[in-house]
Length: 138
Image 1: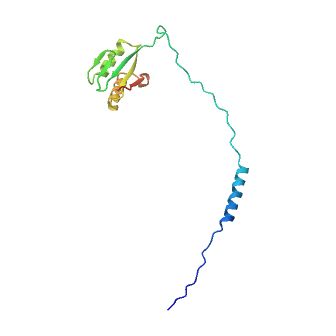
Image 2: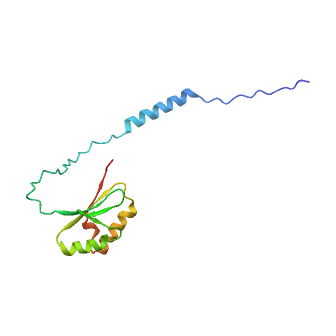
């Protein structure tokens, strides 16, 4: 028994008219496009540091140094663990006009730096007045 199959016509998409329409759209967009106008460039001159003669420098700072192990020194004086606040109070009484600077190794844990900043605050020294430099050693 033979069954008769109805042949279905496949829907065909006309490609040539689509290419024509795309070409017309492309021409339209090219013709109607407004290009960006070049903007003026703002000239920025960054400040440079010139050598300052050593006799004009009046702002000398004492250094609070922290090494990678966590040992603290105030100038050349080794500060025992937990006594930095007391040392800073005495230092401020002896040198009221002297400013401080924190110099730390990059491997010092953040917890250690926070303890140092806490000791500075308890000694009555504003943290924003003590610049910090992180050494990028080996």
